Image (cartoon, rainbow over all chains, first blue to last red; front, side, top):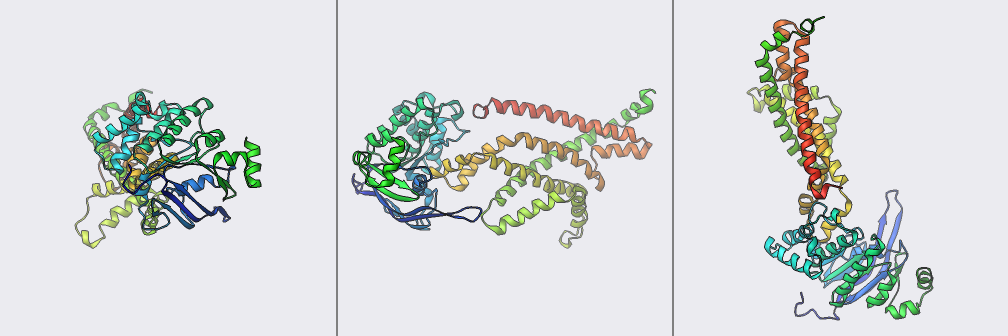
Length: 256
Length: 229
């Protein structure tokens, strides 16, 4: 995965003056993101938190082009996402994304969910893809689910397969959009444990989450968003103990 | 009243070869139109989803035009219209005109059903495919269409049943099929009940066959683990 120039500590994601404006169907204009600036280093694990509607999911979704950029730039490993000439499909192959509702392909087995993107996007042979997928499933302790369809799996199992599908592409960056929000409480742990393992292995991760304990224990840095603005960022210990803005204080009073 | 006074089955038996031939004609004409309309309907759906307005707008106009005018009028336009085109100075056979008209008619309805199927696929499936780097085309072929078609098989079969019944309209341009067999009894013997009851029975027979096939297909599909929810 690592090439010569990629070292832990390099800037992997650089967000510059990012704004995102939606126009609703009835013509109202919504400023979903306003002048966001931040960076994510290689190997860093960043939690993005904030009240609902604060723009945290929108911010995350701009990182792989699921949301377009209205103003500003995002560079991922030096590639400018605001540049119209950027091959977004190639970029998305390098940026894994995990969704709240898993979004596994319903008509494919767990194994096929993991192999299909590899054969289509990475041009692997099906034997190579099978090998990579089975190794990964074994590593994650999910190999017994290889031939099950998503509808036959629990939410926690589906989400772990979805993570495996993203990992099989050997991404530079993993994005998690409220990956545990749709899960029954008893299944949250298995998914968070898997994410914790990835963080320990040095994966660069951006995590939109409501799990404050996870943000505090696992993440290197917290980004606090409110009303489309990046209000505050800092190390979890510092941020949760002693937030420097009133908006963060109010939010933490409510959720902690 | 005895049955034979109402429905002279002895006469019908005499015309059995004509009815068998008509039944066969209806079956194969319908089948050709079904395959053609599924292919054309899929292409129309793809074209209607195009971002390029010069592709999607005329195709949408075609669908609306077909859906808002009677099939018989469409058939006449094709039948009388094709013979007017100078390039095709040789008369186009009525059968070809009929199959062509019935196919473009049914394809418009098929494309609407297919479009409905695509809309019924969860938005998350598009995003899931996009997020792993699949192109729009790969997403449609490998993820969306297989799921959409599985959802709409009952509706497609329903439209196929309508197609079989619609094919009777080809009698208007003297294409021989099941209703045409009935018309032979009518003109030979002036026996409308025998003519049309027998034809109706033939359509009923095809419908029942399709119903059995439909149930088999559905049973097989619900046996598919992914579709069993």
